[in-house]
Image (tube, rainbow, N blue to C red):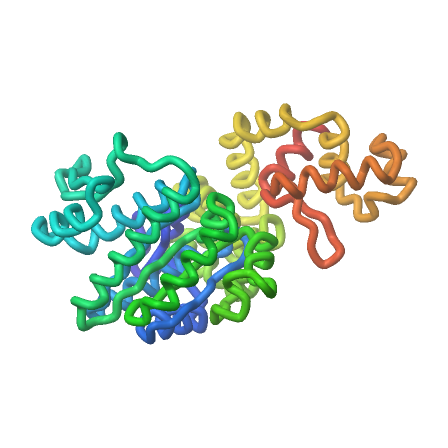
Length: 378
């Protein structure tokens, strides 16, 4: 086996090819939905690999001649921005100037045809013509969604619309936006829709009876990857790059898990440190984690400083491994005050996604923040 010269791990992007592992069943399910005019909801905690599953699936569909219109709504601040991102995604699959002119003319006067920084044509909502108010914004989004159907009507191959972090529609436009999307999806039978999201509590609320998406989607929940598989894959990637590593993957999964991206981020940092010596062990795992914590210090410190003293003490308790946070012994040891105060602080920290409560346990959403708290507060 020829050793790799580049880091065998990638993060902060949608990984495909050899940088992607496992999830064969999930990819098969997404591809079936994409090519079969399905209505699929892919959901689960952040950093588990949902976006990479969608990216790998899109590669397979495109290789078969399909068209994938992918819009990431995570940071959209209005329904107008949602429409704008859909238009940009359409621009990426409609590179012919004439067709984009047709789109701009059909959606005038609010849609313009311009060019991005690389000189490629791009559709967008004109700044001077952006509508104000919920009804006007929903009307624009409805026109854009209706227009997407024209892509499906023209293409003989599958056309897929992927809406990543689609729960932003509910956050921005309420239940009215949910019903708008459902109606457009239901009427546009020629197009497959794959919606993905990571805010599980909000998504579960959207799936309740009397809500738009009740009993509407086929669902795929993406949880933690099998620890043994991820550990073995990490060791194989390290070994293939010329770094002798036995049991390092298991140590990383145990210290950093369960979220795939966090573990791979630690593996990537470890490789940079171990590539020169050609070996890695348990000490290398701790060194890699320490390096990530140092690099993230500014952001983690800022998060800490915005917390109340009680919230800070509660994070110290969780970082120290306290399990019964309401127990009198824990409250006395960490000066948490009455049980009602603990409940209030827990609700605030989980609401900000700093802590996660599941299966009767409480843990940090970001394992590197946990390490920062442990190192900084003793």
